[in-house]
Image 1 (cartoon, rainbow, N blue to C red):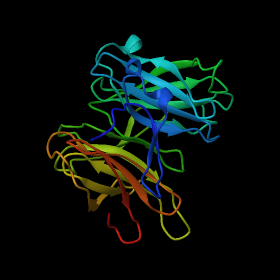
Image 2: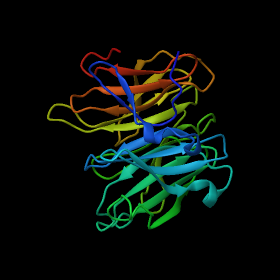
Image 3: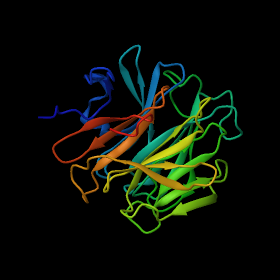
Image 4: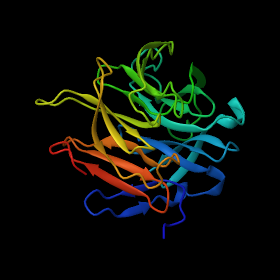
Length: 275
């Protein structure tokens, strides 16, 4: 049986042991969806939702085991808001000033919007109140977000529709710069990450497809997508399956899966392309 837990947890990649961060496990916070660790290693920013009745951006302090509300999206954008994926924005840009505590982009699938929140510096109490939260882009069913190492912004959107695909968008205006639509026949692209280049390999975007279990490698320059693996989908066609993913420094991907009666973290080995 799965533990009843809806907050953040640490996964030991050597043993698979899962350790909850108990301060984040509260019914009033909703269900945690996506997260990112600040470069200092102390703070985690994550978003939560609960069937269109609660939508939040939150901050967790690893040093003190305390959890804080940053943004109430429900109050700002209404009941259709449901934060999904998020990404930390590179500092030092016009839209994310060096003096800020960082910027967070959040996709809202049912709300059909992408938002940007500029955090105060440092991004921790008592300065945890954001400087601003604003609309970056309106687009049908946005999901995964990722920056490459050149500061280009990419978005998976159109989940469950014929417009499902990968989009490069202007990080300042939100305008679509280019796109590749329809390469995933299940129209269920969800998680997105960027695996930086090494001395022997170029950098690629990787995306998961929930319903088919497909893992896609995407060239950030051309947006050409190549299927490089298939993960087990516990409830095919239900919208459950492979979801978020993140690379390590050794060329491997860790892919979270949800749905049915199981939850899992899969290791995709870049060297031999097996799980």
